[in-house]
Amino acid sequence: MGKYLIIIVSMVLVNNYPLAQFLGICPFLGVSKDKNSATGMGIAVTFVMTLATAVTWPIQQLLNKFGIGYLQTVVFILVIAALVQLIEMFMKKNMVGLYKSLGVFLPLITTNCAVLGVCISNIDKDLNYPESLFNAFGAGIGFLFAMLLMAGVRGKLEDQSRIPESFRGVPIVLLAAAIMALSFMGFGGMFS
Amino acid sequence: MENKSKLSILTNGLIKENPVLVLVLGTCPTLAVTTSVTNGFGMGVSAMAVLICSNIVISLLRKIIPDNVRIPCYITVIAGFVTIVQLVVKAFAPALDESLGLYLPLIVVNCIILGRAEMFANKNSAIDSALDGIGMGLGFTLTLVVMGGIRELTGAGTLCGIPILSNVMPGMSVMTLVPGGFAVYSFVMAFVHYMTKDKSKIKKSFGCSDCAMQDSCVDGSGCAKEEVA
Image (tube, rainbow over all chains, first blue to last red; front, side, top):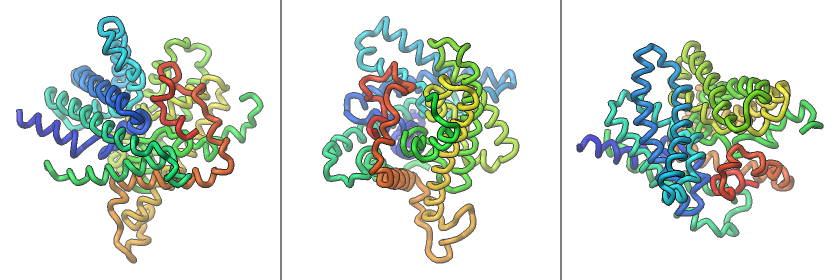
């Protein structure tokens, strides 16, 4: 069990996806304007990441068995797109409350590089099935964590009148992200 | 769109609608691979190849693809070309493959490519789409090379591997790490804002109506772009 705990903690703090690996930057900059949408997006991403890994890992074994591992990219992105569509349809019908709070973020997730990224990196790192699942779950939680921190920082940036004109909008957010990334570097080396 | 000259389509992507700095698309590879000029250039060229090919194919297929399933169709076309590029890079430039790593297959979810397919290729002829692909690809490559240059020069004191500053002063290695990426991106973007300040309507040329995520977008909350406008 300790092994899996270490995987999760290292994915949240040391290898945080937006702040240490440059994955999922688009939603990190785009959807982090207020805490509610940041939480919704973070939870939706965690959910899809874990499910996508649960599906793509066995598929990769199948591809390897037939010697067509090079089709990885094509197969994975189609599986993720189909999976997101299925989750959306299922939620719309059976979990109306959850759909209302998370549903709007689901279509955006297909083109989120963090989801495809976690599926491919699990294969690249030769993780076994439970390790992959915990890795994906930890990556999602790390994403949620970074989104929430960013939403908090952006709440303070609302008054843009004190920011130099050229830096208003995206540049100041990037600068805040740079400072956050700098502080996250402090976690580096916690686990070797 | 009809009365645009071929040249303006080509130069559009370089500055006026620079995909990285003005449209804020494709941020992940921009930040991740610009640790050196060579990496930035390699990534830019790979993405450009995919962009041109997928623009042409999608433009040719634009009358055949049904509107409801167009996004999955585009993704399939793009993923096919990404796989080709991946295999070519692996065969002929293994060092580049090593340094780009995970980000090479991730070209498939690079929003620049899907964005241009949705915004340009499905409305215009194949030749115009190819030109748009070249222009956007050059804009992307140019930005990556500039950012790679700044980060390599300040971080390692070299340029394309040739020592320039490293004999005079030690490199600030933080610039080639994650925080340096965010900071350099921020400063380059602020510089572009400063340069285009007087021509502020440039940034407005891109609206929500052209966006790939228009259907699913809730009052622009999922959109990084509308802030720039």
